[in-house]
Image 1 (tube, rainbow, N blue to C red):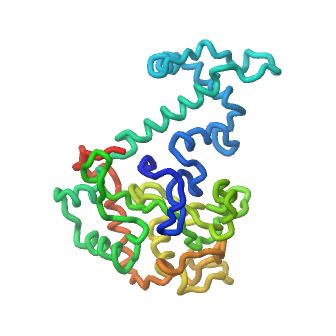
Image 2: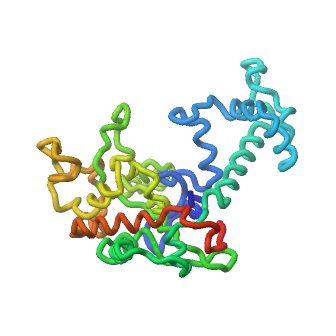
Image 3: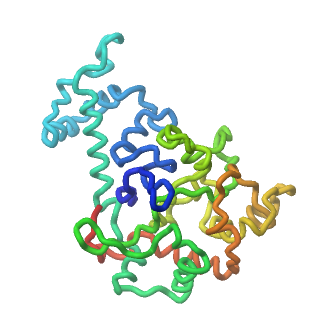
Length: 315
């Protein structure tokens, strides 16, 4: 959720960094561009072509009717791929239907279904709920000692309609947090290069200084969206909060294979050691109690505390 608020991928000259886009490396500039990818990705839906996707759409009469009603496109006029000769070129209409499909998905992602603003935190901001003492301490740590708010912005803004925009808990920038490699990913693939794998970044010749940087995601609904980190190396909020606090205060090579538990005596070395952010995390000095307080606050960011939202903002 809340991906609809991410700006187009761009270089912010004033701040000297890349901002926005979709996916962990921003390679899709817009929601519609992002929606086009999973259908053809061999690791996701693995459809062989856009034409095959359109053919699948044609199997549902509801889609045929809706494309006609909303876009004036006749899916029946587009031949199905499985009925056409193998050498037949892609027929007229396929690309337009596929493009309209991605636009429809993007429009759905902008709806209240994905952007509810119904967390306890929202109701607290609106003056209609109170944090518990532990949650309040966590909120203070979030904005001060924990340095979380430096990237996960908690200040409300102004929506396009002029109303209050609840905070999105991200500044849409990119960072290398020095995460350990996740050796439990099937096949143990090489680490994701982050921004260095974004074709736009590669094209302008700055991939080296962006190696390992991944998008600062919104913390909304963070308590119900494990695992954590771009590679899913952390299973719980407690683990990743402890990592943020102690990354640079424990050995980064676990000689004993970390038998006592992940992050107890050491942290595995970073999967990509270049460009690690050492200014805003790594040695926060949070006590175990402060870490628990911070986790308690993060749990107030989950939608569904009450309905409807106390805010009227939409993407």
